[in-house]
Length: 233
Image 1 (tube, rainbow, N blue to C red):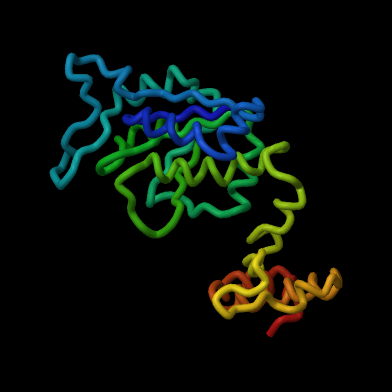
Image 2 (spheres, rainbow, N blue to C red):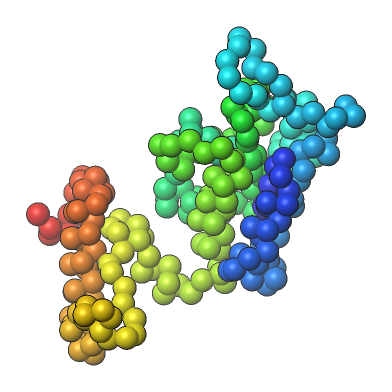
């Protein structure tokens, strides 16, 4: 997979791709990236990329000329182009799986009050929201999307790790424990020390159901509507 990230702060993007599992995926050539500085496509001596919004109001808006030129150079007419924005479609695991099947993705990192609507009309395929809140950095939102997507690529994580994650079954993941057996008076549940894998799997399923019921009852309702009620009331 090729990821092309358009940003006003390329140093921020570079540091993201240079750490942890993502850096290993780049090293293994599971994916590659292009770090595109939008300012490189500004034509005035000050490299201006933003201006006041028509109609008045607070903040600034990214201008269409440099951003449009950067998108054209990145091949936005050929590749799926994503714009993270609070006004977009809500992101979830199924959406991440859909995007992970693309050979190339372009991400626009907005700033300030956003980007000119004409850029969205001309170039953007997906407006995606990572949640019902607002960030000052479009890079952070793009990083969330990229992280959820790249880890699904073959060779990044083991199939076992992916199978047991939250949302794979439609439920939240069960609690995890490691050594020591006792920490500040709290013990690891005995069932996890039993060696009985059938009972452990059953315990984990029950814990996932209980946690989902507590924090995300909407997920259980969705499973029920899909005929996957898990026998849980």
